[in-house]
Image (cartoon, rainbow, N blue to C red; front, side, top):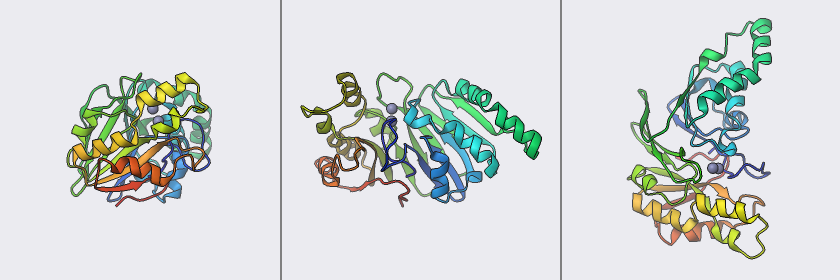
Length: 274
Ligand SMILES: [Zn+2]
Ligand SMILES: [Zn+2]
């Protein structure tokens, strides 16, 4: 768990959304929240072992670290990386290269570095199904429910010994339940709806409406985990997660446990889920 906050506002207590799925010595990254390159360093996951990136959707809390990840990882021995995600991933990649051209060209000329552009290979996805396979892992995508974004995905990783599903940002989703059937681990985003429904909630009504319509309340997360029959549930992308004590651990857990009796873990930055 590289970053467990939800929403674009920088937070003191949690980093922006990102998860590393580590299979042997290979790293597969889900989402690129701001600071993901440093979170990898803090987790002691060498960037040269990064094989592929999977972006769930193009909200800034999930992609602001995408360009910096490979720009900064370049000098740390980045090898060829395939990046999967919804449009406009290809255009974003091209324009980021344009924005970073000065540094890239300087380092190629001055430090003799190999060109960066061939190392980053974007692939846009617009529907669910199997999207990636190598000798370590098969990745399957499902369209979740994150209005108004049509191309928003959950991802399932099947390896020789584990299956891990990451919900992405979503409201209660039958597609996520189907994707997560029997998985060892479900990492699910988390909304504590009562926090936004209290009379003195500071958010503008339009923001509050977006939050409630596009995220999953804790009670529904329990229903999702139970219906999918997952062995372990990990909460992440906490909304709210600022201030850190806005919702207590007991409150997060109580809602989930109404419907799910399996193991529940409250995600923290740099936590390793076994
Ligand atoms: Zn988000
Ligand atoms: Zn989002």
